[in-house]
Image (cartoon, one colour):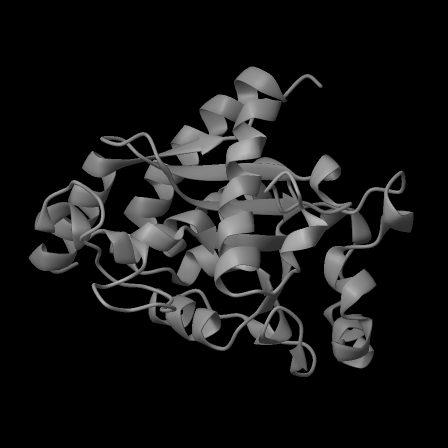
Length: 253
Protein backbone atom coordinates (compact mmCIF):
# COMPACT_ATOMS: atom_id res chain seq x y z
CA UNK A 1 0.00 0.00 0.00
CA UNK A 2 1.38 3.40 -0.95
CA UNK A 3 1.75 6.07 1.72
CA UNK A 4 -0.59 8.31 -0.30
CA UNK A 5 -3.34 5.68 -0.42
CA UNK A 6 -2.93 4.84 3.25
CA UNK A 7 -3.25 8.49 4.17
CA UNK A 8 -6.39 8.89 2.05
CA UNK A 9 -8.08 5.93 3.74
CA UNK A 10 -6.98 7.14 7.18
CA UNK A 11 -8.53 10.52 6.37
CA UNK A 12 -11.76 8.88 5.19
CA UNK A 13 -12.05 7.02 8.49
CA UNK A 14 -11.52 10.31 10.29
CA UNK A 15 -14.30 12.15 8.46
CA UNK A 16 -16.92 9.44 7.89
CA UNK A 17 -18.67 6.62 9.70
CA UNK A 18 -20.80 3.69 8.57
CA UNK A 19 -24.18 3.07 10.15
CA UNK A 20 -26.54 0.13 9.74
CA UNK A 21 -30.14 1.31 9.47
CA UNK A 22 -31.91 0.14 12.60
CA UNK A 23 -35.09 2.21 12.73
CA UNK A 24 -37.59 4.06 10.54
CA UNK A 25 -35.95 7.45 10.98
CA UNK A 26 -32.60 6.18 9.68
CA UNK A 27 -34.38 4.44 6.82
CA UNK A 28 -36.00 7.73 5.83
CA UNK A 29 -32.53 9.27 5.54
CA UNK A 30 -31.53 6.57 3.05
CA UNK A 31 -34.75 6.94 1.08
CA UNK A 32 -34.30 10.71 0.96
CA UNK A 33 -30.82 10.34 -0.55
CA UNK A 34 -32.22 7.94 -3.11
CA UNK A 35 -35.00 10.41 -3.96
CA UNK A 36 -32.55 13.25 -4.54
CA UNK A 37 -30.25 11.11 -6.69
CA UNK A 38 -32.64 8.79 -8.54
CA UNK A 39 -35.59 11.16 -8.94
CA UNK A 40 -34.47 14.79 -8.77
CA UNK A 41 -31.01 14.56 -10.27
CA UNK A 42 -30.91 11.66 -12.72
CA UNK A 43 -34.67 11.32 -13.21
CA UNK A 44 -34.62 7.53 -13.17
CA UNK A 45 -37.94 7.59 -11.33
CA UNK A 46 -40.80 10.08 -11.71
CA UNK A 47 -40.91 12.67 -8.94
CA UNK A 48 -44.69 12.55 -8.68
CA UNK A 49 -44.53 8.88 -7.64
CA UNK A 50 -42.98 9.94 -4.33
CA UNK A 51 -44.84 12.97 -2.89
CA UNK A 52 -43.12 12.41 0.45
CA UNK A 53 -39.72 12.79 -1.28
CA UNK A 54 -38.65 9.30 -0.21
CA UNK A 55 -37.76 6.94 -3.06
CA UNK A 56 -38.83 3.46 -2.03
CA UNK A 57 -40.03 0.19 -3.47
CA UNK A 58 -41.54 -3.12 -2.45
CA UNK A 59 -38.12 -4.63 -1.61
CA UNK A 60 -37.13 -2.15 1.10
CA UNK A 61 -39.06 -3.92 3.84
CA UNK A 62 -37.07 -7.14 3.47
CA UNK A 63 -33.73 -5.38 3.01
CA UNK A 64 -30.85 -4.35 5.24
CA UNK A 65 -29.70 -0.79 4.62
CA UNK A 66 -26.46 1.06 5.41
CA UNK A 67 -25.60 4.76 5.54
CA UNK A 68 -22.29 6.54 5.06
CA UNK A 69 -22.41 9.58 7.34
CA UNK A 70 -20.21 12.68 7.20
CA UNK A 71 -19.25 13.19 10.82
CA UNK A 72 -18.76 16.96 10.88
CA UNK A 73 -22.06 17.87 9.21
CA UNK A 74 -24.10 14.83 10.23
CA UNK A 75 -25.29 14.58 6.62
CA UNK A 76 -25.81 11.24 4.91
CA UNK A 77 -23.28 11.03 2.09
CA UNK A 78 -24.33 7.68 0.67
CA UNK A 79 -26.45 4.59 1.10
CA UNK A 80 -26.78 1.00 -0.05
CA UNK A 81 -29.04 -1.96 0.62
CA UNK A 82 -28.75 -5.73 0.66
CA UNK A 83 -31.83 -7.61 -0.54
CA UNK A 84 -32.13 -11.30 0.37
CA UNK A 85 -34.76 -13.49 -1.28
CA UNK A 86 -37.76 -13.87 0.99
CA UNK A 87 -40.71 -16.10 0.13
CA UNK A 88 -43.04 -13.68 1.95
CA UNK A 89 -42.13 -10.86 -0.45
CA UNK A 90 -42.46 -10.76 -4.23
CA UNK A 91 -42.58 -14.57 -4.50
CA UNK A 92 -39.00 -14.76 -3.27
CA UNK A 93 -37.59 -12.88 -6.24
CA UNK A 94 -34.65 -10.50 -6.15
CA UNK A 95 -35.21 -7.04 -7.69
CA UNK A 96 -33.24 -7.85 -10.84
CA UNK A 97 -35.32 -11.02 -11.29
CA UNK A 98 -38.51 -8.99 -11.15
CA UNK A 99 -37.53 -5.86 -13.04
CA UNK A 100 -34.67 -7.03 -15.29
CA UNK A 101 -35.61 -10.62 -16.12
CA UNK A 102 -34.97 -10.20 -19.85
CA UNK A 103 -31.38 -9.08 -19.20
CA UNK A 104 -30.42 -12.28 -17.33
CA UNK A 105 -28.41 -15.01 -19.05
CA UNK A 106 -30.15 -17.95 -17.40
CA UNK A 107 -27.62 -20.49 -18.71
CA UNK A 108 -24.71 -18.62 -17.15
CA UNK A 109 -26.57 -18.25 -13.88
CA UNK A 110 -27.50 -21.94 -13.78
CA UNK A 111 -23.84 -22.81 -14.38
CA UNK A 112 -22.96 -21.01 -11.15
CA UNK A 113 -24.74 -23.84 -9.30
CA UNK A 114 -25.42 -21.79 -6.18
CA UNK A 115 -27.88 -22.50 -3.39
CA UNK A 116 -30.78 -20.11 -3.23
CA UNK A 117 -30.42 -19.46 0.50
CA UNK A 118 -26.90 -18.06 -0.07
CA UNK A 119 -27.82 -15.38 -2.62
CA UNK A 120 -28.63 -11.70 -2.30
CA UNK A 121 -28.63 -8.53 -4.35
CA UNK A 122 -26.74 -5.35 -3.54
CA UNK A 123 -28.70 -2.43 -4.93
CA UNK A 124 -29.72 1.22 -4.60
CA UNK A 125 -26.14 2.34 -4.02
CA UNK A 126 -26.25 6.13 -4.14
CA UNK A 127 -23.94 9.00 -3.24
CA UNK A 128 -25.76 12.24 -2.47
CA UNK A 129 -25.27 15.12 -4.86
CA UNK A 130 -23.19 17.51 -2.67
CA UNK A 131 -20.60 14.77 -2.15
CA UNK A 132 -20.09 14.18 -5.88
CA UNK A 133 -20.20 17.46 -7.76
CA UNK A 134 -17.21 19.57 -8.62
CA UNK A 135 -17.85 23.29 -8.86
CA UNK A 136 -19.83 24.04 -12.01
CA UNK A 137 -20.75 20.42 -12.72
CA UNK A 138 -24.30 19.14 -12.76
CA UNK A 139 -24.31 15.37 -13.15
CA UNK A 140 -21.05 13.62 -12.32
CA UNK A 141 -20.60 10.33 -10.53
CA UNK A 142 -17.69 11.36 -8.32
CA UNK A 143 -15.67 14.42 -7.42
CA UNK A 144 -14.77 17.04 -4.87
CA UNK A 145 -17.20 19.67 -3.68
CA UNK A 146 -17.16 23.26 -2.46
CA UNK A 147 -20.78 23.42 -1.30
CA UNK A 148 -20.04 21.86 2.09
CA UNK A 149 -18.15 23.62 4.82
CA UNK A 150 -15.17 21.30 4.91
CA UNK A 151 -11.49 21.34 4.12
CA UNK A 152 -9.84 20.32 0.86
CA UNK A 153 -8.35 17.42 2.80
CA UNK A 154 -11.86 16.18 3.56
CA UNK A 155 -13.01 16.75 0.00
CA UNK A 156 -10.36 14.46 -1.45
CA UNK A 157 -11.82 11.55 0.53
CA UNK A 158 -15.23 11.88 -1.13
CA UNK A 159 -14.17 9.60 -3.99
CA UNK A 160 -14.21 6.73 -1.46
CA UNK A 161 -17.86 7.14 -0.45
CA UNK A 162 -19.24 4.85 -3.17
CA UNK A 163 -16.58 2.25 -2.43
CA UNK A 164 -17.30 2.37 1.30
CA UNK A 165 -21.02 1.89 0.58
CA UNK A 166 -20.28 -1.14 -1.56
CA UNK A 167 -17.98 -2.54 1.14
CA UNK A 168 -20.81 -2.05 3.66
CA UNK A 169 -23.03 -4.15 1.42
CA UNK A 170 -20.23 -6.70 1.20
CA UNK A 171 -19.92 -6.76 4.99
CA UNK A 172 -23.62 -7.54 5.23
CA UNK A 173 -23.23 -10.47 2.83
CA UNK A 174 -20.64 -11.98 5.17
CA UNK A 175 -22.57 -11.23 8.35
CA UNK A 176 -25.77 -12.79 6.98
CA UNK A 177 -24.09 -15.64 5.06
CA UNK A 178 -25.50 -14.38 1.76
CA UNK A 179 -22.16 -14.25 -0.03
CA UNK A 180 -23.32 -15.06 -3.57
CA UNK A 181 -24.01 -11.55 -4.75
CA UNK A 182 -25.92 -10.22 -7.73
CA UNK A 183 -26.09 -6.57 -8.78
CA UNK A 184 -27.43 -4.51 -11.69
CA UNK A 185 -24.58 -2.11 -12.38
CA UNK A 186 -23.61 0.64 -14.75
CA UNK A 187 -20.31 -0.11 -16.55
CA UNK A 188 -18.22 2.27 -14.43
CA UNK A 189 -18.82 0.42 -11.15
CA UNK A 190 -17.41 -3.02 -12.10
CA UNK A 191 -14.40 -1.22 -13.59
CA UNK A 192 -13.93 0.75 -10.37
CA UNK A 193 -14.24 -2.37 -8.22
CA UNK A 194 -11.85 -4.34 -10.44
CA UNK A 195 -9.13 -1.83 -9.58
CA UNK A 196 -9.60 -2.78 -5.92
CA UNK A 197 -9.27 -6.50 -6.68
CA UNK A 198 -13.03 -7.22 -6.58
CA UNK A 199 -13.93 -8.65 -9.98
CA UNK A 200 -17.56 -9.21 -10.92
CA UNK A 201 -18.65 -11.63 -13.64
CA UNK A 202 -21.18 -10.34 -16.15
CA UNK A 203 -24.14 -12.73 -16.22
CA UNK A 204 -26.43 -11.09 -18.73
CA UNK A 205 -27.02 -8.30 -21.17
CA UNK A 206 -27.14 -4.51 -21.10
CA UNK A 207 -30.54 -2.93 -20.65
CA UNK A 208 -31.92 0.52 -19.93
CA UNK A 209 -32.91 0.34 -16.26
CA UNK A 210 -32.05 3.47 -14.29
CA UNK A 211 -29.51 4.06 -17.04
CA UNK A 212 -27.69 1.41 -19.06
CA UNK A 213 -26.96 -1.46 -16.70
CA UNK A 214 -26.22 -5.17 -16.81
CA UNK A 215 -26.43 -8.02 -14.27
CA UNK A 216 -23.22 -9.04 -12.53
CA UNK A 217 -22.26 -11.72 -10.01
CA UNK A 218 -19.50 -12.23 -7.48
CA UNK A 219 -18.90 -14.55 -4.55
CA UNK A 220 -17.90 -11.94 -2.02
CA UNK A 221 -16.09 -14.37 0.25
CA UNK A 222 -13.80 -15.30 -2.65
CA UNK A 223 -13.47 -11.68 -3.73
CA UNK A 224 -11.98 -10.82 -0.36
CA UNK A 225 -9.06 -13.16 -1.10
CA UNK A 226 -8.03 -10.97 -4.04
CA UNK A 227 -8.79 -7.57 -2.59
CA UNK A 228 -5.95 -5.05 -2.42
CA UNK A 229 -4.35 -4.87 1.05
CA UNK A 230 -5.26 -1.20 1.54
CA UNK A 231 -8.87 -1.84 0.53
CA UNK A 232 -8.94 -4.90 2.81
CA UNK A 233 -8.00 -2.63 5.71
CA UNK A 234 -10.86 -0.32 4.75
CA UNK A 235 -13.23 -3.28 4.47
CA UNK A 236 -12.26 -4.49 7.95
CA UNK A 237 -13.00 -1.01 9.34
CA UNK A 238 -16.41 -0.96 7.61
CA UNK A 239 -17.19 -4.51 8.71
CA UNK A 240 -16.59 -3.78 12.38
CA UNK A 241 -19.04 -0.88 12.37
CA UNK A 242 -21.74 -2.81 10.54
CA UNK A 243 -21.28 -5.90 12.69
CA UNK A 244 -21.66 -3.96 15.95
CA UNK A 245 -25.03 -2.61 14.84
CA UNK A 246 -26.19 -5.93 13.40
CA UNK A 247 -25.39 -7.89 16.55
CA UNK A 248 -27.05 -5.25 18.72
CA UNK A 249 -30.27 -4.91 16.75
CA UNK A 250 -30.79 -7.91 14.47
CA UNK A 251 -28.89 -11.00 15.55
CA UNK A 252 -31.70 -12.50 17.63
CA UNK A 253 -34.59 -11.31 15.47
